[in-house]
Length: 64
Image (tube, rainbow, N blue to C red):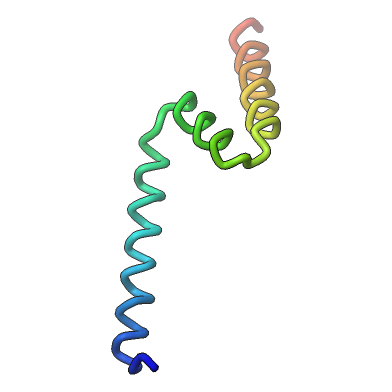
């Protein structure tokens, strides 16, 4: 069984890795993000709907 220090180190390392992944996701283009969503089969239609709604909202705002 792992000692307490090792468990804390693994927990910290995992959090750092997750933060790095978040940074990577934040720097992606929408296209790259959508490709990853599809790759991992993560409800791509929801993302597509949000993008469509956003395009529509911005379009409406800019054409007033």
